[in-house]
Image (cartoon, rainbow, N blue to C red; front, side, top):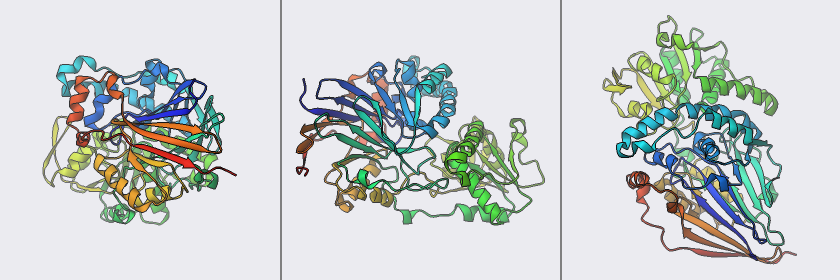
Length: 523
């Protein structure tokens, strides 16, 4: 029997998408438990093949814990269910109300994603097929359990979870995970998930002092970890006001959850301020975005009722049959539609129409990934030709973008969060481009005197934690080790793809680090 409490934490993502952590726990009495924190879909082009790699056995996972409803954190859960995972899936009650529609949307895109990869990797085309179907989504929904904020739950014997509010998204939660030591000091983690300190739809209350005093291993995102708040230019409202004053037709591409609702709220506030001319049509489109918006209203009725009335006045839903005629009206239009990167949903119909119209503006309010229509619009010059779904169009509309609508914290906001904790054991950085993670590591080292150690956690590394001693006098030993992911179905196609990726900048694991943390005897 093992006399110590042990935990192994490994990550399956290299940079931003595909978020998934595996926590393997060895209790002092000999029992072993395995928990996933998130199980996300890889969306970056260079990592997308990792969605098809079998790098763990779903039948051996005891539970899944979800931070929030974004596909890069939840998108592979139905695949896990299809392959044999039958345990509970924990998330906040709000996330549980929202996640099902997004899983169904992801299922509907499987055929298209499969065809894309078959063309990209023709020699391995036979290996690509849809990862899951609607019936797998239904099973995943049946296994999902919604939890409230700020109440601790024992999700499996010896493992306790508490959700704390997170401004990243309605329903998003930061996770305090506690492994009971049974006579020994607990091992405790704090997962930020994708983090932002505020949200326009609800107030994010401060973390309790009791939590901030704990000896926590903090796993922190770093998406905007090299950008300071004062580096972001707030131009969206100004751009919209100038376009409205000129009578321009305006197209805004928005992600179905979060960004679409925030854009609708912005338009409503501009209406209330008298900033939108009365002659404008205000429209929105996209089945998933519309469904999510209606669910936002329903959730806010009980969660934060004053914000439930956020829809613009005289808002129109565009009929699918009328999309091609959106500009054939005597009135100018302001249209908010999915998708945020303009490569899916109704946006594929709307972009060519607005793009060719010199009296139109296309405004991006989110990240534009490679090989998306949004990226093509940003990188092309005025009057140049752009190919969309095999057809060529001339870029005559103005195209704007802004980073101000990001749902991620900036470097200074992340540092403020970390500095709240009185004596963290260490900070592990994830969820960011490789270069950004390195910059953020330096910032934490330089500016957070409360942090004794800061490092990265990704596909290359795992961390072995051993809690020794008793609750009163304890020692936590931490060892950084090479990851064992390569023993799980690491196929030739995925290895080649990663070598071509930004992730290839990693030059090895380096020397394993060993750290030991001791706490003075409690009195």
